[in-house]
Image (cartoon, rainbow, N blue to C red; front, side, top):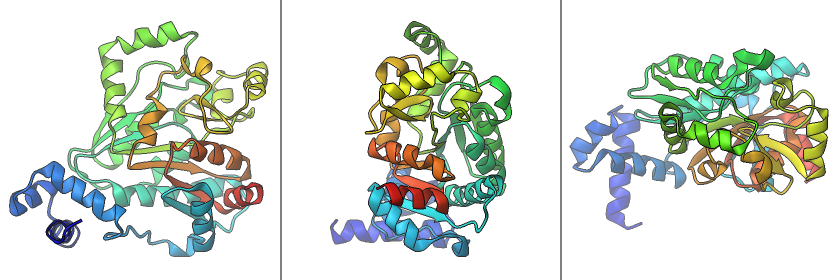
Length: 313
């Protein structure tokens, strides 16, 4: 980057972070477009001109975080040492850290795509309410249904949007359908198509990371029974992301995934901020799987999950 462009970037950063100007105000003051301002702010973070710090440093194991980042080959890893053994408390504290991180990176005019699950529900509930101008939250995959409706993507998206004073866009359809033709038919419904298209161009993605055991979200919702799980694992499956089944090497089981109503995982792979949240050692293999596929570049996990990843790496 030449000196002129770098000086412009630093000027934009100062106005945004130190003088609390909006992106449009900066665009007017500097004489550039608002999208250019947004790009310069993103570039500043990528080039370490701006560093996002979380003010709960005592809960972050810095050494483990660096080890996990290197082992998984991702942009950033945050390992939370909760000093707890009860899974519910571990989930709550890790989700709170993820909420702090998300609050630190969202900006006006941002679209945030969110999935479902206990981690996402806990994250949404942990967000400190504050207004973000023209903020949108969009559901990334169809609904789970079943006994865990409070953890469904639509409820998570609504809670998250309300915390930021933004708008919520939901997918009115199930996550997994009987066949690919039904998925294609739902894509023809304008409300569904427009929501998925918005989700496909989100600025930030944040999602839970699913296993294929009997306690997974897909199993509890009735999408996978023991026979179905066994069949998938015989084909090499080890995790799911947005209901899309992944082999251990991160590749998709396409025959199953044709039945899934969600954005393509390639959207996550090509995004600047695709964040995954997971807790406990039982999620370690799934975390490795999704990062091998390149779908997530920021991982927020607890210490037991991190230690299991290192043990098996």
